[in-house]
Every structure is written in C-alpha cells, then in structure tokens.
Image (cartoon, rainbow, N blue to C red; front, side):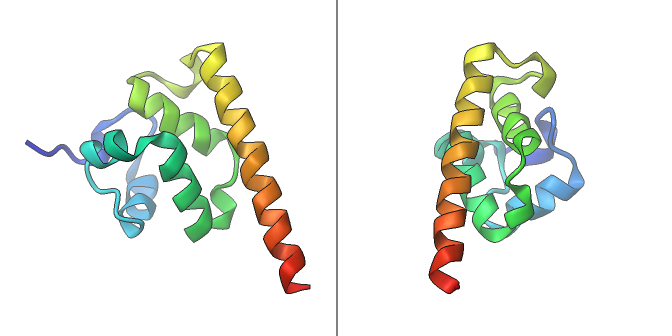
Length: 97
C-alpha cells in the first residue's frame, strides 16, 4: 500500500506540497528515484531549495532518521551534490546573461 511522503522523518506539509509538484507523492516515489534525483528535480522547480538542509532532509527521510543523525559519509554525499547543483545553476545563469 502506498504511503504518503509526509510519513517520513524530516518532511512536513510544505516539503510534501513541493515534492508533489514534481511528481513525488508517495514514499515509494522517493525510494524509486533516490534522494539525489529528487533533490535535483526539486531545485530545478524551486531554486531556493538548493540548501544543504533540504538535501539532508531527503537523505534522512530515505534512511529513516532525523537529518542531524545522518552518517558522515551521507552528509559528504549531500555536500558534494550541493556543490554540483550550484555549479550547474551558475552555468545556466551565465547562459542567460
């Protein structure tokens, strides 16, 4: 049975509404796509979501833990993806200048 995304830790009603706009409505959607792809799609739709806490929240949601309790290796993965997404955003900005 499908479970609503807000059943996961770290994801409240605002995050759930934004995730719904990119087609992530169920826990299974996040599991299927992975936190990395979901965060990249979320940042594309909501550029202000390119913040480290949203990355931690999504990763923690999949691991079933509070974002503050993420293992160091996962935190490093979130930081690396944040850096990559910032580079992509900055590159796209230059195309419009």
